[in-house]
Image 1 (tube, rainbow, N blue to C red):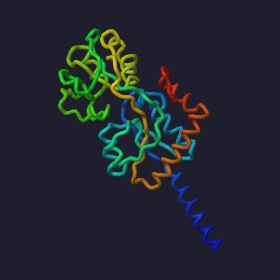
Image 2 (cartoon, rainbow, N blue to C red; image 1 turned 135 degrees about the vertical axis):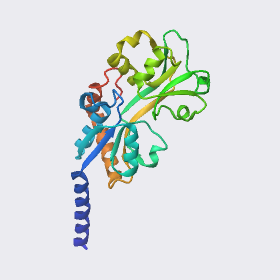
Image 3 (cartoon, one colour; image 1 turned 90 degrees about the horizontal axis):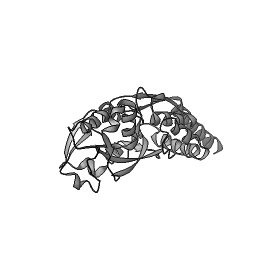
Image 4 (cartoon, rainbow, N blue to C red; image 1 turned 45 degrees about the vertical axis):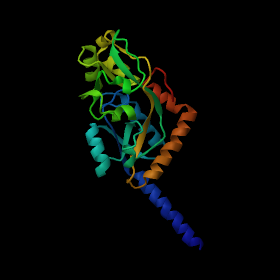
Length: 249
């Protein structure tokens, strides 16, 4: 009996070792400061995910790729892990989410002096709103096909549309909006302002393709190691490299 138990332990150990020996492909779309090809270590999200998984014993490669390719890869098996994600019921059908590592508020942006305030998604009916193609903001807003949504490619384009009167409003994470204005086009700072009122507070996650071999173990290892890094201050230090204001790790 002992030899069979020992053999079973060896088999489990070998499977675990094989899983950790492979290179996990972690991808995220271009969404500064959370992820981007020109950001330090690929941005906050990719930097944190890589650090956590490597501390857990995995080998990781990170890439920034278009959102459409990420979704295709999650469904056809060419993507292992996706970063820079908000929780989403549709994505949860093919991805298993890890614990969150950052929180951010979703707010609207308006021309300076426009006088708007956020009360509800329904109250946005009269306004044109610039939104990113395929972006996820908040579930009720995302489903609201009765709104006048003007689809653009990037958050910068959306902010520029509001600044120059081609859209009434746009929205995104306040961290993303601040980054776009401060880093990409500081001239916008005098033309736009945040709308009072928060649409949602969203957590930032990584998620593993559910049908990836060992996905449950990867998520469990990520969650346990993330908790360790949050407790010993390592996570906060990582976050502060990318978002200095209101770090909430």
